[in-house]
Image (cartoon, rainbow, N blue to C red; front, side, top):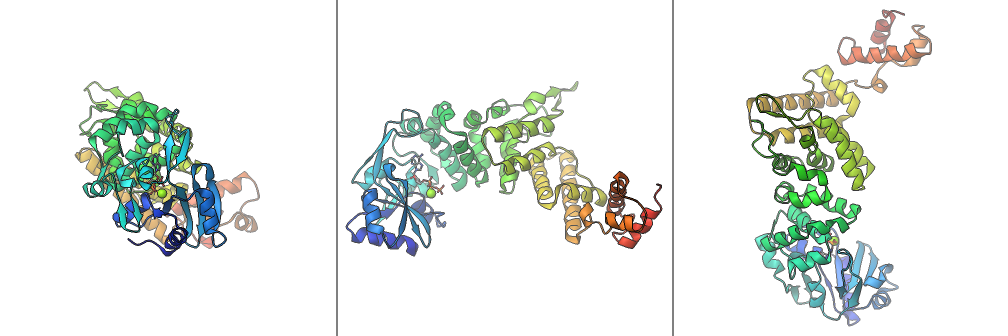
Length: 444
Ligand code: ATP
Ligand code: MG
């Protein structure tokens, strides 16, 4: 295993002082999977004060959670958390232990961890794996350490962590673990909005996100109530070969793994049940669901305390997901001017994923072609640097005033906007002389 030198140095310092110390948890799991761990956590039988005494003055430490046994060590390779072997006691709030007790034995510490794949350590002899984590990694399974119902009962966050790891590692959730997660789902109300958001955010970007969503809609509905009515909802449409939730999960799974795009797809159709009507032929429609869905998306994300930047990006992606995209250069330029290229790219990605999650009918195939054509036109305009905004126009207000075409005032602004429109439509070149000549022909 490739333990980086900033970590081996800490291990050596602790071991030389006579303590046990080993990498544990996510870093062991990721290393065995051949992935680069995002961070290295260590566990040790040294008490926090002993850890500090042993490592100083060579390393600076931060008292992250001394009472819980955690000291953060600042190394050249980044911060490393060193936590004393511990067991946790009394989860009366379904979320946090009432207390922790330090223990001498690594195995006891591993036993308090959530899933077998997260309950391995690397000691001087090799992998310490008392719960079959390696076998579960091979089998691609998320399984609780110990009795699943008890583990979810202790800490409801583990329910979302199970879904998140299943999505990110693209693993299945072992049936007894999944059944217990399902049964414990009502306790999710105890998990803070910020924690829910963080887990969902990671889950959505996972390779297995669509599969996990499809399988665990009922659990999701506990943290996003608007999901509930979508489960099993029949859209009564030849364009859909799945129920509404199946459609949403599929759309997420075929989308590129970009945060805004995946969130928008999760939320894009949540307003369909409330906007739903059947026509005289028995076909389903949901007029206004995009606008209502945009408002709902904002509500959901705000409730989850998502970052404002995400809310601001997702809202229009949902609002516009059902609007036909322009099929001519001028239209593509107008959208580019309004939204900018990164947003347009996301809009097209949302649209494509949404369409791909439909039945392949002639109408759907035509819309796919339209989306592709729009993307092509917009990408070309972007690459060429076409003028799509006033600040790209070769004509400034001062040019119009200097040439005596127009004085300051509202007409100046109107003239510049009209000039931009001429350029976007391709009727006048984005050239100062051409634009001044054009302006001269405009009525006062
Ligand atoms: P990553 O950092 O890649 O998200 P990780 O496995 O390192 O994954 P962390 O949240 O950093 O996850 O937690 C580190 C370790 O602590 C986990 O591997 C697990 O052993 C344990 N752990 C974390 N949260 C819980 C929890 N709620 N219940 C039980 N054990 C937990
Ligand atoms: Mg970690």
